[in-house]
Every structure is written in structure tokens, then in C-alpha cells.
Length: 217
Ligand code: 5GP
Image (cartoon, rainbow, N blue to C red; front, side, top):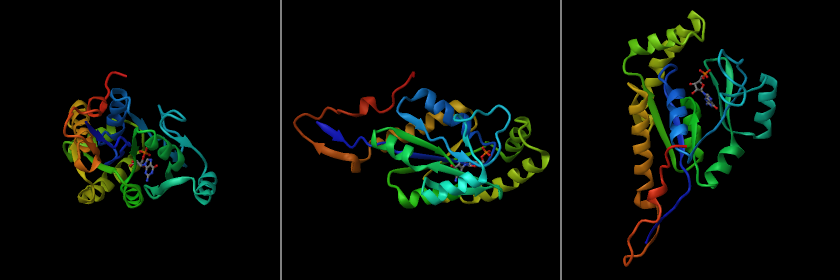
């Protein structure tokens, strides 16, 4: 028998605004019942088409600062020079301990903090197919003012400069391709030899790998 550790991975997805992180995460979660999203808290206001408790939990700056003092967050950051965004610690740990993969869609500052304090963290950077396409996507989604769009586009260059701090890079040309690649990364992670707990050479059938990626939720 080949028995491997079945604790979940913490998957961090980062990349510039408009690279398609949100769509990729939604599709990964839809296709894999062992992937759970972490819903972040933010002090920014709710945007068109977003839902409380689905996209974020929306709280005031004061409430956010109180939660920082209570030690509520695994990590938090001020993003786009303006608003707080943070990952709730207890929920993430609870799901990882149950064996789920937990997905965090967070910025680079948060990603690096999490990498320092947690093990089994997979940092995946999502790139758009081109900067021209990124710009088009930012305008098309019609969520922010012209000023904000330009600021996000500028910031994209700085973010991409940090790409070497990540473990994997995935180009989002088509969502389905990007999702397939991330599923392959997760499967490869599960096959790492440092996950082996027991290896009985008489009966070598795998007891775990068949249920690694469960489809069709
Ligand atoms: P948006 O306002 O477009 O939803 O998100 C802005 C940025 O905040 C994105 O780059 C996103 O990855 C990042 N973000 C969202 N939630 C968190 C979080 O909990 N922590 C950190 N550090 N960044 C976050």
C-alpha cells in the first residue's frame, strides 16, 4: 500500500486586476469538491454585481482595524493604497485540517506573508495573454472609474515584476486551459515523495490518488 499525507494545500492565486483570477477560482471550485474558497474581508465598498459573503465580507475601516487587533486575520494588506483586505485565519485552518484545498485570491504582499508562516503553500501567478488584452478586460468589465482603471493597469507592471517569488505561472488565454493547468499542478503536488507516510512493497496499489481531484460537483 502507498499511503500519502492527505492534508490540504493552501493555494494562493495572485495576478494583476483583470487577469481573470476570479473567474478561474470560481471554475476551479465548481469542478472540484475538494477546493474551498476563503472569503476575504474588505473595507472597500461593494461593487456592481457583487454579493456580501460570496465575493467578500464588507466591513468598515474601524471594524477591520478592531479585527486586526483581535488577531482575526491570517494576513491582511492595504491594496491599491486605499482599502484593507484580509484573510480570516480560523476558517482557513479549519478547512485545511479537514483535508480540503483552500484557495486564496490575494495580492503579492499577502501571498508572501502567508508563505512565511504556513507550509504546503502553492503560489500561482496568473498572467493575461498580453498587456493589451489586460487593458481591454479592465475597460470591458466596467467596474471602476477611468482613473482607477489606469492605476490598476500601471500597478500590473509592478506586480508582474514580482513573478519570480511565486512557484507557478499560468497564462489565462482561455479559462478552461488555465483551470486545467492548475488542476495538473495540484495533482503533481499530491504525488510528491515527501507526502509518503507508509510504503508497503507487497501491495503497492495507491490508496489515495484516485480521489485527489473530484469532478462534477
Ligand atoms: P478587488 O478590489 O479588485 O476585488 O481586489 C483588489 C485586490 O485585492 C486583488 O489583487 C486581490 O487579489 C486582493 N485581495 C483580495 N482579498 C485579499 C486578501 O484577503 N488579502 C490580500 N492581501 N489581498 C486581497
